[in-house]
Length: 299
Ligand SMILES: Nc1ncnc2c1ncn2[C@@H]1O[C@H](COP(=O)(O)OP(=O)(O)OP(=O)(O)O)[C@@H](O)[C@H]1O
Ligand SMILES: O=C(O)C1=C[C@@H](O)[C@@H](O)[C@H](O)C1
Ligand SMILES: [Mg+2]
Image: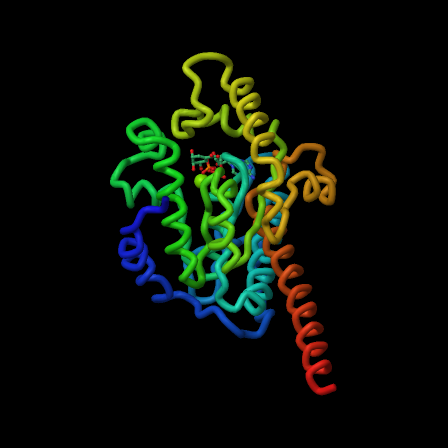
């Protein structure tokens, strides 16, 4: 059973979005790009009239200049891609789905900033709605089922809004009703190999992730075995997403042997690219089927 009462909190928070930000909608897909001089490039590139967008990764190495060039290129590519995608999105929300640690929050924040969308993390909204500081505590004091009910309520409330990027909880995909809400927008599955997930999670610890938290044992091994179990239980649930962004595919395209070499910006660019292709393909399909219906009606 879903719970009520989160709508007001969401509306109050979302009411602020749009102010001082770039308008979405039908703009020219590609604006004029001013290429900054990398020698004096700031550490963040600004989207038209908005906050700094792309977190430039300026790696410390002897090849410092090359890395700076690469980061500037990445930021410009991200900006250009976001301008193209905005044209096609027409205000539709983006829902990021994927296992714990797959980068939904990290990548989602980058996407929201370049698109001029608001960012929401559904786990955080559940915490606010329930009035508890962490998902771990909600699981402990109430139950997973209670958390899931609130998660569905949050997704229901979000589904009536526009211009949002939502990082969903890792398990949101298991309830069919959540797909009904997420299908109001576009869903993107961040598909990350379990080994990379376990490495990321072991680095930050499992305390905030109740389904992975273990009192003892090597953090990587414990995370890997729990994640494998969850992945098996969830089966194809993530594949319901409109778009799949496979880190293995991006890494192989870029000639990397390890997905850990990919930056969140690389992943945001690929996500926007896949979204664009999906929308173009489906708009074409719809136009073709509409014109077929019209032809049949005039017979
Ligand atoms: N491309 C990346 N490369 C390296 N580390 C990353 C990358 N993306 C995310 N991370 C790191 O991995 C961890 C998990 O990322 P994040 O919190 O964005 O995932 P999530 O999908 O939102 O997880 P959860 O489902 O638990 O909310 C964070 O510590 C983040 O800094
Ligand atoms: O994968 C999951 O089931 C979860 C992921 C987190 O984002 C939280 O929603 C919660 O810890 C459960
Ligand atoms: Mg998150």
